Length: 156
Image 1 (cartoon, helix red, strand yellow):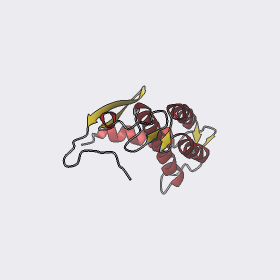
Image 2: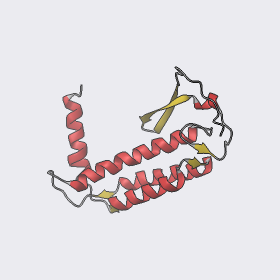
Image 3: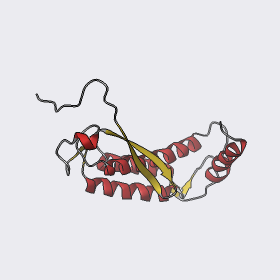
Image 4: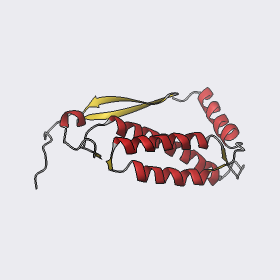
């Protein structure tokens, strides 16, 4: 259940803080740069070095986002505001994804690390859980429950 105070705080964040920003950063430039950063540095095939560069770029975009400008100041059907909120969420998700990928030092499951080319089921068989704090994403892990088939190397 969401408290009345939480609703008021979110309305203030959106309609007073976010909507009234008078910065100089173009929202859509940030979105384009975020997409390019993720394409270049957080693909399926990756290295720790590439991921680290990507994380630095995401953090720069997160700082730049604080200085955005929303041209449409309306409160009804405001697609600029909707896009601003979406881009804010995409930046947070990108930061979590890259941080999580850096924490996974194996080539298996959802990604391949060129700097860790060997299969390692012990390291892979865990779910990455991300919680958010003021310092940034915090990682924790939960074991995978194997119910029927143990993982085996594919041989073609």
